[in-house]
Every structure is written in C-alpha cells, then in structure tokens.
Image 1 (tube, one colour):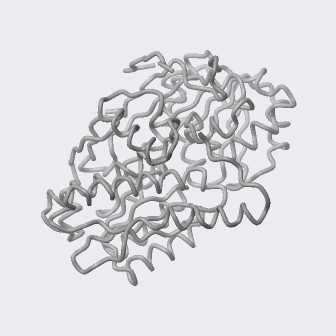
Image 2: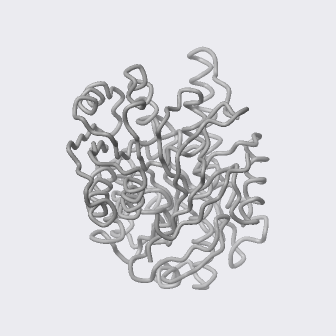
Image 3: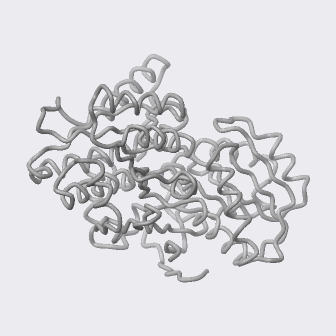
Length: 409
C-alpha cells in the first residue's frame, strides 16, 4: 500500500436481557438514555439536532455514536460552553429511513429551532438530511455517511463531512486486492447510495493498483436484508477467489453466520468496508468471526496512535463501564468538536458565518488533526485497514497488523 504506516498491536459487551418483556423495556430505557443528551434549553443555549439510528439494525452503530456525542457535549459544557453558551442536544431516531430522517430533520429545525444538524448513518439518510439542511439554510455535519455524492454532485454551502468517503474506501480496497494478488473478484454491495458508490470507487481504483484483477459478478442485496443464502450460493459458484464488499453491521453478521457452514471463508479472501473491524462487530460475532477477512475501522480501543486518543478512550471506557469500547463514538465526538471550533472562529452561530469558518478549518481530535477541505467540505479522514486475526486470551478477533491508510491528497 502507498503511504502506509504499520503498527504492531499491543493487546464488555452488554449482557443479553432475558425474556421478551425485559428486552423491550431495556431497549426503551437505552433509547431514552441515549437520546437525552442535556437538560431543557434556554434562549442562551446553542441547540444541536442529532440524528442517529437508536432502534433496529442500525442501533449497533447509532447507540455508540450517541454516546460519543453526549461525551463531547458534556466536556464542552463543563469547560464553560461556547461563546458563553451551553450546547443542548435535541435528538431523534433516524431509523435508517431517508423519509423519516428528513421529516425529523425538518421538525428539529422548524419546531426545536436547532442551530445545526449532526449525524446520519446510511448514505441515503445522509443525503436526505443534507437536502433539508440546504433548503432550510442550516449547517449539517455528516459524521458517518460516506457516499461521495455528499461532497461532489450534492455539495452545497451547508454540508460538511467528517467521515471518510466511498472513493477513498474503494481506493484502499483496491490496494489490498493488489497486496493479496486477487484475480477474480465478486462484488457484493447493498442496493443503495453507499453500496453503489463504493462499487464504483473500487472499479475506478482497480486499474491503478491491480489491472489484472477482474470483477466477474456484481450482487446487490437490499438495505436491511437478513437472508444472504442466494448470494452466497452465487458467489461460491462463480469461481472468484476474492470478495469485495460493503456489507456493514448486522448485514455482515448475518452473511458471515450463513456462509460459514459452506466453508465460504476458507475459499475466498473477503475484503470489506463498512468498518466491520470495529469492536461493535468483532465482539458481536466473537468466535464466529470468520477467517480471511480484511476490513477497516476509524479507531481501535486497543491501539492509541496519539496521547489524546489514550485519554479519550479512558474517558469513554469509564463512561461505558467497560475497557473494550466501541468505534463509532469518536466520529460523533469529532463532529461536535468541529462545530464548536467553527462557532468560536465565526464568533457566531449564524449558518453562513459558520460555513465560511468551517472551510479550511483544522482541529485536534483523538485521532490526530482533522482538516476540512475548503472546496469539497470533506475532512482528511484516513482509516486503519488490516486482516482480522485470533489472539490468545481474546474472545474476538483483532486487527493485526494495523495499517493506517491516510486520506488521499
């Protein structure tokens, strides 16, 4: 891989609730706890509208993201707030549904009077929130959605992204195809903006890194799919040696469990985006996490590239009550901190002034410096990539070696 730094790896999960009633009550309590970021707002507060999926299949990521958001707000307010004002959170469950997210975003602006929108998970949701932000003239910081369109064809003055994007992810995956000498590729992506754009990103990057590699089949299961058996059969009958994919969260969990009985992962190298190297997925699959998987993550609780990350992870660990913490909190945390810095630079919460202040802005984060490109509104966010391996004494796989792939210049 180009411009890579390799690091060796130096080194709970929530207990299951028993019974349907307990599970329902526990889920409801967790949702309320996560969505209650602050006390009642006053006229002198800065109101943040937050949209993450707290229920359904996206909760594996949305719940941890909300914790990171709340941690940032608590730290900012404890430090005196911003321009003499506190941050107050108004949160909604986006439900991985573009229509629901757009309606919630509109309601947050028109009824709650929020100064900014943060969050999103699925790229389709991010695009929907962004369109509302454009129409209403309110800043939207996309902390997770990665479709390249947010910062290209759908770019507008009020949208900014602190996550990575599908072109970068496709480029990194093509580098891994070269590294493992993949020849015949099966491409399986979810049938929505992220999946289509990631597939395009891979196809664009392959000629640069692995010109002899050929995509021989493209499969597009629906977002939210739970049954992957037909796709598994097609891949196994296609003759490909490598699978490139963007199945994320429970999509990958279900795929892996359904494919394992067929010996699928013994016959294919599986290269995937969607951050399934994150602790959220690794711990959920545990001993069922398959062999021959290469994936990515923004952050690893067991590896600190900066002193700031070590301190951040310690605070997060204390808040979560477990040493092994999730990955998504840092993305939400960074989004809040970027908005804080932009408001301070602008000396105002006026959206046009904050937008100008955010262009070219650099902040310190637990993962290092983050800079927003003045033209594209895209952050220079890199990722860790590597194979997931078993280690003695750990009930889940870890990335080893850890390879940081920086954002393209």
